[in-house]
Figure: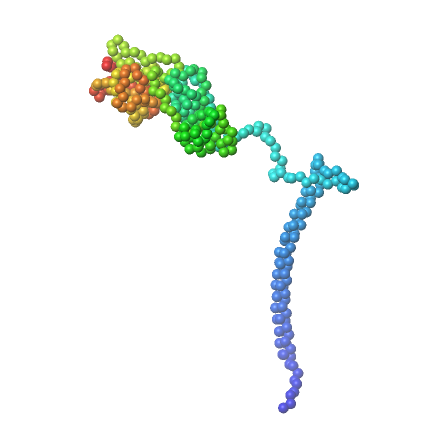
Length: 352
């Protein structure tokens, strides 16, 4: 059979043109996508170079002009003058203040001083500064706290504890053992880790919460002022007042005793020979102590100290307690109560 050639029809050419147009559009989209990806890659790769160039330009701009008054190298053999590089302070120039001072370390208080006046006692001063009389006595080498010298200047410990002067042969461990504390207590408060020279003979250190020796029991009125004794029993044989002072409230139906105001810490003496029958805290009256003699019992309230335990034999005139501010009170005084056969009576008319 013989092959024959035929001419392409118009429809065939139209279809071919359509195929070419579709291919062109698809090719154009691929080309644009490829070009965008290429540009992004170039920018990413160029970033480190751009950053380095900017830093170099900034450094050059800072070092290029030599500041006025800067030190320069003298030219040698005709070489140009080169400015020396100078370090730049962070945040600008550091300047000193008008009143530079050394700040106190956190948790450390300065040692205060106090001058004794006529109305003071060791207890009143300790109460004002929030420490114990033992801490105040130890800091000032006081062995007799009941007879203090007017005008004497006392050192006030910053907290409860011992102000101690280091002596030759002392170690942190030996001082800690003496006051029954951990050595770290001494090292921390006195900053011995950073300033070990503070623990040297003659240096004053502070031992917080140190175990301190107890004060001796009183044998006379508590005084840092002129001594005045409690009024003696009258001719009719009435009870002696427990302390010299002035009556701020008398015995009446709504008040079961007599209030005698006197300086804080003043000694209170027993009015009769007897035995301590009560010693402790009660509501309203605060710290109290009682002396019983037969069917008579006298009690003192609002005390700062009660010296003798229950069962101790006492004699009339012996100091058994000290005036305070415990319980409900508006000032230092003693509420003096007397009972006969368990019934309240006016202390000022009792005849023991």
